[in-house]
Amino acid sequence: MPNPQRITERLFQSPSKYIQGPAALHNAPKYLSALGRSPLLAVDNIVYDIAGKALIETLQQADFKVTRGVFAGEASGEEIDRLTSIGRENSCDFVIGLGGGKTIDTAKGVADLLGVQVAILPTTASTDAPCSALSVIYQPTGEFERYSFYDKNPNFVLVDTSVIVKAPPRFLAAGIGDAVATNCEARQCRNSLNFGGALPTEVSVAIGQKCEEILFKYGKQAYEANKAQAVTPAFEAVVEANTLLSGLGFESGGLAAAHAVHNGFTAIHGVHHLMHGEKVAFGTIVQLVLDGESTSEIDRYIELMLSVDLPVTFELLGIPKVTSEDLRKVAELACAPGETIWNMERVITPEIVVSALKGADAAGRDYIARTGWSKSK
Image (cartoon, rainbow, N blue to C red; front, top):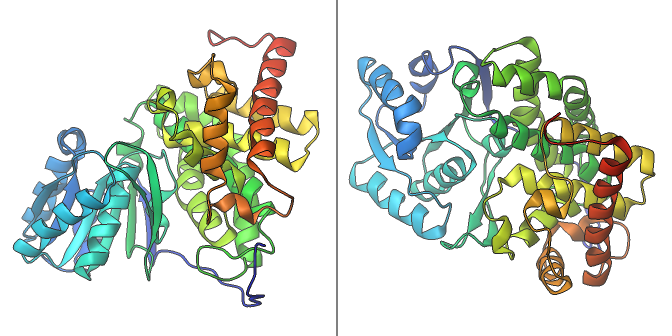
């Protein structure tokens, strides 16, 4: 049952400040000075070369003492503990997470253990992790383990679109795949408790709807602008939808089947190469199948996903010969106790989810056959 305690309060939560624009990193000292003077910077080696060096120089010029914590690649409990030790040893008074979703989730976990504030500086628009008060924690081997919840959202989220646009377009597309689930899942969660432990507010419903509107209006255009490394109004709008609107929408609106299916897919090693949003995109089709949506409505989402090269079939996921046994593993993990799929109002069993997985693949294949879509288009 989505709301066993019969909670009637409604709740909305968000980061204290969200700043987006092509000069966000350059102006970082102005915003971050309110948090402290000795940050722990969580950043992997790739992002360090892209944006980390410049950020450290900018902060040092403003008299910040920066301790670099090299993120090893997996948002695991072990990694959070390791970076927390570095922060303690260097008396860091706040944490900066610079990078993608797993770096960001790790930085939030480190700040929580240190008891300090956190600033999130995403370098891609590939997930809605930056604004939320939770982390997705994985085992060191990559399998989904749990959600970790915090008392408050990040203090600052700074999104530099001149950095975001230099990331491969696949990252923006993955963000679209993550964000397109927001409204679909929130529609199923009106009577369920959100991540703040209360019912969704009307503003969270409106945010989910606006997020979807932007994606359908500008998603393809933004994807092409990203290919040209052009920061256009469409690109800015989709970055905001992927990062802010989706982040606020999922956290205060709720998650359902799409993200549970993503978590289920961690049971299949053949999809570990895929990004979070690429798996969520397919999970959204599964969600629509479970919702009993019409062919024309499912077609609308598949068209958007294919326009930005998101996977809509088992073959495009890279598992063309996936077995019923493997799908059963996905379904059982998606239906684990406490999973978000239980926010659905309808009856859910692993058998029903296996059928929905097969139905989603069939819908994708049918659309491709009817329209003649091909990757080369």
